[in-house]
Amino acid sequence: MSKKTKIKTNSAAKKRFRRVGSAGSKQFKRAKGYRRHLLTKKGAKRRRQLRQGGYVSAADCRSIATLLPNS
Image 1 (cartoon, rainbow, N blue to C red):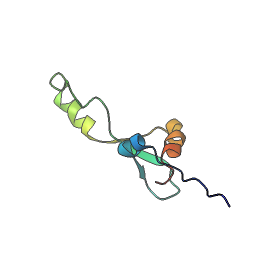
Image 2: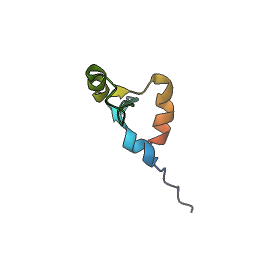
Image 3: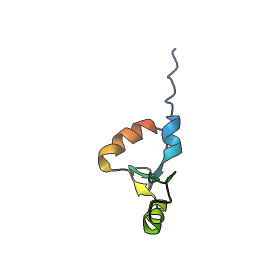
Image 4: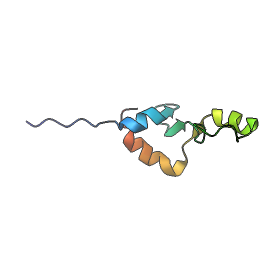
């Protein structure tokens, strides 16, 4: 009798995305980019808005869900 192989979670994706909502929900939360360096030339309002998270677009949700099968 052969064993089923385990489905592995993508390590890069699990550090970047979190599933939001109930188990049936396919929404993922993410951090916004452009906040690592060169912050002195960006305005205070822009930096403040980059602190808030965003959501993955509906077009990309299916591909993220395949990378995170156990979440």
